[in-house]
Length: 86
Image (tube, rainbow, N blue to C red; front, top):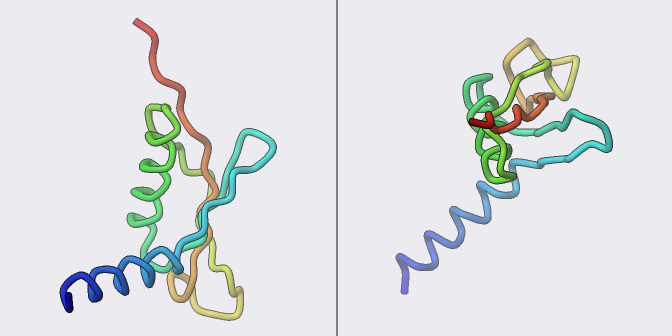
């Protein structure tokens, strides 16, 4: 019981820290806390879940511009790469 509760709390805490917004155009954004490599991984996972090959990163920036670069919440803007046809 304690293990299940701990896993549930962990999953809720992680999911509350990441927001994916699918844009009306050809780019989308993810707000997350972590380094740019973590953002690229999140973007790749979002695109693959949508049936695409992966993500092309357009930009990574701080959500709060007053913080030093790479700290606090980050926003990654990306575009999904289509699946290659054979």
